[in-house]
Structures are given as C-alpha cells and as structure tokens.
Image 1 (tube, rainbow, N blue to C red):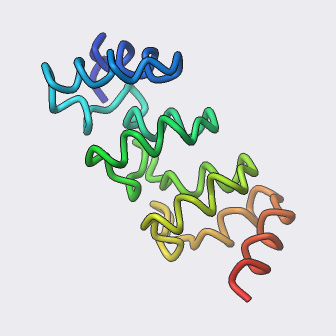
Image 2: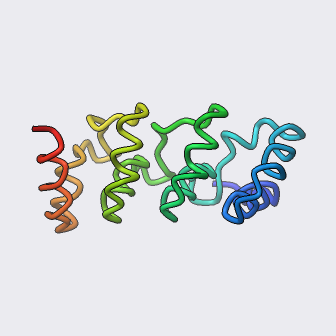
Length: 131
C-alpha cells in the first residue's frame, strides 16, 4: 500500500476533534478523501470506527463513505469492531447497512473470525441480537 496522504490524517484529526465544519471544507476541496485509504488500507471511517467514534462514522457515512470496506489484510470493518467489543457501534453499523454475512480474506465468517481470536463474548452478543 502506498504512503498515507497528509489530507487523510487532516480529515481524521478534525473529525476526532469534532470539527465538522473543517471536515466539510476538506471534503469539499478534496472529495476523493471520502474513499482514501491509509497505509494499512483503512478509510477514515474505518479508522474512526476502530476508535469507537460513532459520531464521526455516522457523519462520514451520511456523506457517502462505505461501511462495507476491508483493510489491506482483507479484514472487514465490522470484524474489527466486533473484535474490539464495540457493541453499540456494531449494532449501528449493521442497522445502517454493514454486511454481517461478509467473509474475511480467509473465507471466514464473522463468528469464525471471532472464535479464532477467542472473542466468545462478542459471538454470544451477536447471537442474542439475531434471536
């Protein structure tokens, strides 16, 4: 993967600081930032999700940033959020279109991925939510 654009960091940083006016201006001057990726293949939305910053995730999604993305290693955003145990964000992502049936680059389902990392409490949570 190529080096991360400085603008990618600027957008992430202004969003983390809650400066949505500055973020809007950055996207207006550089619309492709919405899909830009860092050195490990994460969009700004993916990075903010890993930080459990739902407000920034929702803001970017409302402007067209995709929820069904994966990093350079083929790990979908939703898998990362589940591994980290961010239950509220996980539910928000799924209710806004994140694909819970996605597979990682090894062909594993979300539950298989979590089991391989011994994140059984999140597997239980996901199963309870489905029933």
